Amino acid sequence: MNVSDERRQTAQRKSGRPRSFDREAALEKAMLLFWRHGYETTSISDLTRAMGITAPSLYTAFGDKRRLFLEAAQLYAGEPDAENAAIANAPTAYDAASTILHGAIVTFTGETTPPGCLLASATASGSADAADVRAIVAGYRQQLREQMRARLERDKAAGMLPQSADAAALSGLVLTVMQGLSVLARDGASPEDLSSIVDTALHAWPTAGRC
Image 1 (cartoon, helix red, strand yellow):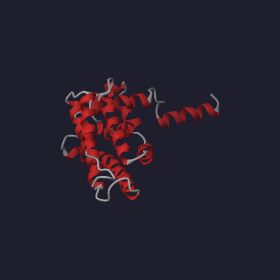
Image 2 (image 1 turned 90 degrees about the vertical axis):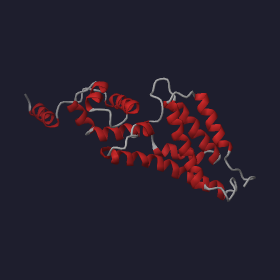
Image 3 (image 1 turned 180 degrees about the horizontal axis):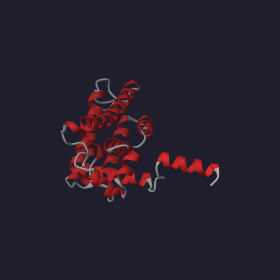
Image 4 (image 1 turned 180 degrees about the vertical axis):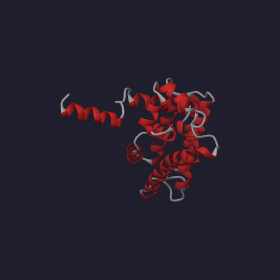
């Protein structure tokens, strides 16, 4: 054995065995499990069985259940910059809200994914053990609400909305409708029914010609 081989074997012993699974594929399986059953009711054994890995491999690759969930939630939520750009670049705040809500329907009623919203359903329990996880997930929603509020204020400044329009209330409306869509999707509502609800909610959207 030469010196380089010996050093390589020593490094492998220190760092552990090389990972023998597809990390991204395993993370997606974990995301689907959390989405279907929630954060607290999903056990480590449930996760390792679904991901096809051992508990030591899970801890080595993801840290622990909490960090695995947060990484799965990030995978679900996507890149925040992309969402922010979609809202900022929409023709109007109305168009941004419509795109977000109709897009949510597609996500919540996918044929190959669990119904509803992962961020809403996975942390529905009130256990103190998951308080920090719920706070982080709430941060995702708050970020979306702030992005919508900023876009609404921009439309008001441009005269595309009446000055009487309440940007905070309207951005809250978008989030409230989205959460309701998640609940109804989990109850089995069809995409068509959910789309009608979105259209009805947006019908009350203020316009520059109406106070």
